[in-house]
Amino acid sequence: QSALTQPASVSGSPGQSITISCTGTSSDVGSYNLVSWYQQHPGKAPKLMIYEGSKRPSGVSNRFSGSKSGNTASLTISGLQAEDEADYYCCSYAGSSTLVFGGGTELTVL
Amino acid sequence: QVQLQESGPGLVKPSETLSLTCTVSGGSINSYYWSWTRQPPGKGLEWIGYIYHSGSTKYNPSLKSRVTISADTSKNQFSLKLSSVTAADTAVYYCARVGSSLVRGAIIQNWFDPWGQGTLVTVSS
Image (cartoon, rainbow over all chains, first blue to last red; front, top):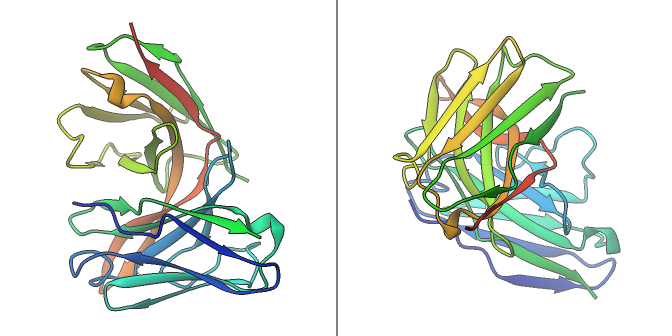
């Protein structure tokens, strides 16, 4: 069970859109549409932003969207805002009742 | 609104057992699954395991030999024990409720919400 692969960092200017990728294998991301995404500000607990690949919990801005193609899931943030600057983690079901996280991506709003 | 709060020693000696408790308020643990995840300083998240109130558990294979998660429904709490700790176990430990999805007729636990604030546990002599 290896960690999912995310870019270490991404950046964008206010108002722009950015996409964070999360690459797994045919045993996890590729087999199930069960990827969740979490936002984590410094010193804070993670916050659920997307579950089941593309569903948004109540209260999460519709600027956040999720998708999947093959073994790669993606989180897109549109209309980038300063408050979006944070670390983002993906997590996937990996079979046999196990879960695996990505290494995390630091988002910088320029 | 469900809230979770971790508690336990902030310092554990090498080779000893780390013990943490998560207290759930605003809802009963007699439904849902409940989990532990950790984050070493400056690093990413690592899923540790989860438990159902009945006592059914699932663990990360890489930690399975050292982890025990248990639940106390009378106190609305669940707990984590990690044995034979080393400096590599130094981390912020989070508890969270686990969300489930229906996939091809099976219910699969696969997302976390809400989370506790986390508690830092340092392993050092």
